[in-house]
Length: 288
Image (cartoon, rainbow, N blue to C red):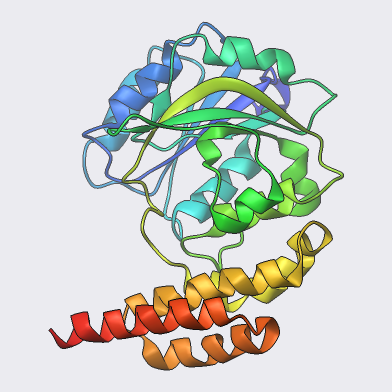
């Protein structure tokens, strides 16, 4: 059956995978157990060398909603862009292969919001194994300080066609940069639902990593998105965090110009005090 004659599902679930044989079956089962069935599951496999592809094909043999793409890619965000390009659904959701829906009725409940009234619908997630909830409506101020899990979010596919997909120059923070673009854009109609969507495995791809290109472009990202919501002082305060992060990693030469840039734009004694304390602490640990 060609694409033109294939019934169009309301939702496409995109799952990038690579060598995930130990946990992908559980993630797939939380999708296949959903009471809501107007979806397709698009598994984008980067030529796994373990049994990942076989597990997906076994599930595929008994479920017509599953599609499999198996080919080389340039990383997880490239795989997500491929999923966007190949998706048939009007709405998109991205699930990690070690994550899963919170219960069997999540999609049934949320699907009532997949209407012409909204472009982006999102709920909550539960971080596992620590059972820590991430919940609440997301503001630009929140995205200034941390990303919102994409496992919380359902996107209308047309958003990516209009505003672009995942920027591959950001190897770790491309989902953060995309969410900044979307959540700071007042033209995008957003709906928060106080429902736990998924269990998110806290050891995911971007956990505890710093995207240096993202921070090199921070002023550009801020001015293009946050500036209509937040002040320049808040931009430089965030750069102050990055300066201290560089110090924590003993990258003192890189931290120095960031330090002066922040100071010259904020004249903040508090920033100087906190950063110098961080510097001497870092030097002491580095010497020890």
